[in-house]
Amino acid sequence: MTDLSAFPVTRRWPAANPDVLQLYSLATPNGVKVSIALEELGIPYEVHKVTFADNSQKSPEFVSLNPNGRIPAILDPHGPGGKPLGLFESGAILVYLAEKAGKLLPSDPAARYETLAWVFFQMGGVGPMFGQFGHFFKYAADKVANNSYPVERYRDEAKRLLSVLEARLEGRDYLMGDEYSIADIATFPWVRGTDVFYNAREVLELDSFPRVMAWVERCWARPASQKGWAVPA
Image (cartoon, rainbow, N blue to C red; front, side, top):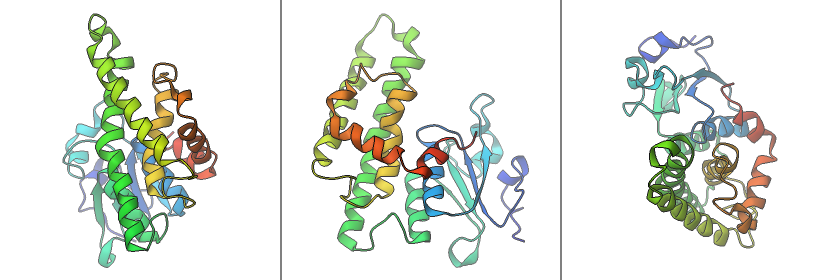
C-alpha cells in the first residue's frame, strides 16, 4: 500500500485507499473539470470535499498541496517514475491525466498544441471572465446595485468569448472537430454554469449562440459528464 504520509493534506483528509488517485475538490465549474475527466478516462479515484464554508481551501494542509489555495488539486500515488505526485491548477491536471491515460489529447503534435491552445483559452479567458461576471451578477449583486459597470463589463466580455466559441464550433461537434477532448471538458462546465449556477441565460443571451448551446448539450449528454458534475456530492 502506498505511503502518502509525507503529504500534509492527508492529515486533514485521510485516504481510505491510498493506492488510488486522491481528488480534493468541490462541485463548481472549475472543480468538475477534473472529476469529469477522471470519469471519462476511467481512472479510479477517491474524492475529498474541500468546502468554502469553513475556508478549507485556505487551511495549512490544503495549501501544502496547492500554494494558491484553490480547488481542485490531486495527489496521484502512482505519478512519474512510480512516485506520488501532488498537482494543482485544473488545466495542468487535465493535461496530466490525459497524458497518463493516453486519451482526450491528440497524439499528433500539431493537433495536440491546438488542443492545448483551447485549454488555455478557457484558463485565461472563459474561467476568469465568466467567474467575475457570476460574482457581480449573482453573488455580489447587492454590492453593485448602484453601479452597473462591473456587471456590464464582464457580461460583455463573456458574450465576446461565447462568440469566439460560436465561430469555432461552425462545422464541428467539438472544439477539435469530431474528437472530444480536454478542451471541451475544460470549457463546457463554465458555459453550462452561467445558466445553472448563475441563472444568466437571458442576460448573456445564450440562445443567440446556437452552436455553443448544442455543443454544451452534446458534452452534457455524456454519462461521465453527468456523473462527474455531482462530485463531490
